[in-house]
Image 1 (cartoon, helix red, strand yellow):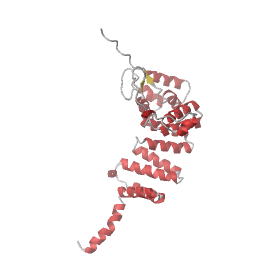
Image 2 (cartoon, rainbow, N blue to C red):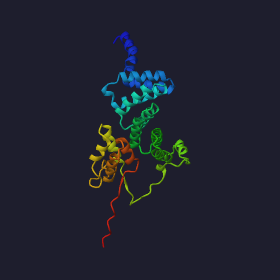
Image 3 (spheres, rainbow, N blue to C red):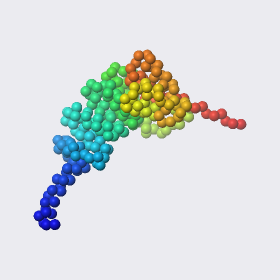
Image 4 (cartoon, rainbow, N blue to C red):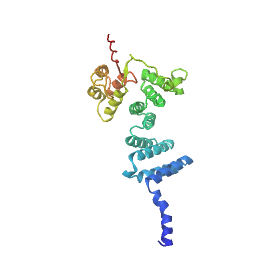
Length: 269
């Protein structure tokens, strides 16, 4: 290899590397750390434009989330919403991204859609105090004070000061930090039921249909079973004239959809 050709390759190699998704994404992170939002935004945009399937869906989702935060800080709410949507599409288990999209939707008056995002966030992370606080604010916007208070209370228990102030309570230590207490004869919580119904609704089916087709916990225990009592309550709420979403929220409010634990067997003589 001639010295001239070697020099040309050395000169071109940084530019070639910069055209890869990984290089642009790394540059975006560096610029963001330096505080140059404009340069970071451009770098993440270049990364997304150069993304290839081999770069991975999860990495692309992270880039979308990073650019969404930059766009939100810059006042581009529509652009940020589009990027958060792309982020959760690529990483459906990202509770923070669901919550951030919900906040933007709430900010722009899309309350019902925001509630759906907050439900998704707390289903993914039941200890996500900020998401409970955000969902409470969405309930407030709809005038549903009872649901709002319950969520503010839960957020307060998880250490969100602003939520404590809303309900006039002092900040409590997060429940997750307290030692577990065994409650042998209390109801079995069915968070899996709510998550399964939400996933079914996310796929396009009505909440009522999703609850009706879920296997009853009394006959088929499993992570996606639903108590028959909750299915009956859902049907009653729908028959009363409530909307599908309102019925779901009323019956499946956090930790309220339960099934009695099986009775302990009598000791044999």
